[in-house]
Image (cartoon, rainbow, N blue to C red; front, side, top):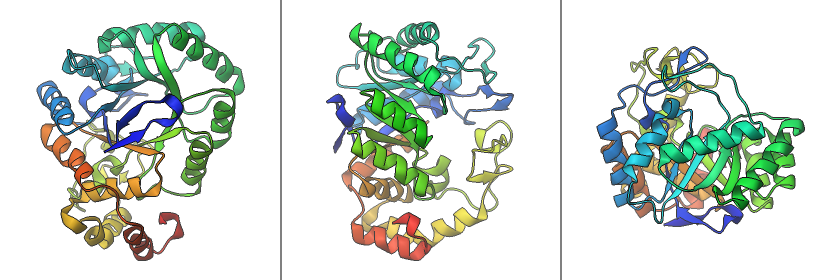
Length: 332
C-alpha cells in the first residue's frame, strides 16, 4: 500500500514510521521531550520490523534525542538505504553531549548547511530525501533565504526535496506559493481535525503537496492502552506539562478523549482491526494526499501499526458513523 509524496515524484508506504520515540530522553526548554522506556536495542528491532512490514518512509529530526534518533536510524538502515525515503528536520539548536535543546532556533543559510552536513553524517547517507524546517512559525524575512538555501542544497544533491513542519496557515500559503516543496507536516488525527487542519489540508491538495500527519495516534491515546488511572511522570513528554500536549493533563489522559474513544471503539475495530489500526485507517479515508506517520519504539508497536496496511482505509460510511457518534461536523 503506497501513496505519492506530493510533487516530489517519490512514492512511499501509506504509513511512515515516526522516529521521535526511538531518540530517547532529551530536554527542550527545560522539560523532558522524549518518551520513557526507549531502548536502543528495541529501536533497532523496531526499524527492522517496520521494514519487514513494508515501511519505506521514516520521519525524524536532528533534535530528537539531541541527534540520537538520527544515529539510531542511520545504523539500523546501514546497507538498507536503497528504496527508503528519509525525512528529517532542522532549525532547533541543541547540545548532543548534554541532551539539551534550550529552545533557540536558527534557519539562516549558514546554520541550515551546517545542520544538513551533521544530519547526513548521523544518518550515514549521501543525501536526504526530504529536508524539513522544524520551526513552527517564520516570517518572510527568514522564509525566503531559507527557500533559496534549500533549493541550492537540492541542486548540489545534498537533498532531493524539502518541506515544513507547521500548521501556521498564512505562512504555509506563502511557502507553498514561493517554493516547490514536497510536503507540510502537521498534527492530524481523529481528535485533531478542526478548521485549521482542514485548511492546511486544502493548501496541500491545491499545491500538489503531501500532508504528512504526525500524532496520528494522539501520542498513544488512540491505541486504547490508557485509562483514567494511567499516569506519566516528568520523565516522559506526556507528563512534562507542555501546553501543546493536549491529550494529557498532568500526565493523565484527558477524560473527554477517553470517552470519545470508547464511543467509537466498535467502528474503529471493525473487520478485525485494532484500535490503532482503525485510527490510522480513518486518516487514510480523509484524503489521498495524507501520509500518516506513527511513532514506534519496539517491534510489537511496529507490527501492529504497519499491520494497518493490510486493511486499508475505513469506508466513507464508517467515517460518517464516527462523525454521527461524536456529534461534531469537524470529524466528517
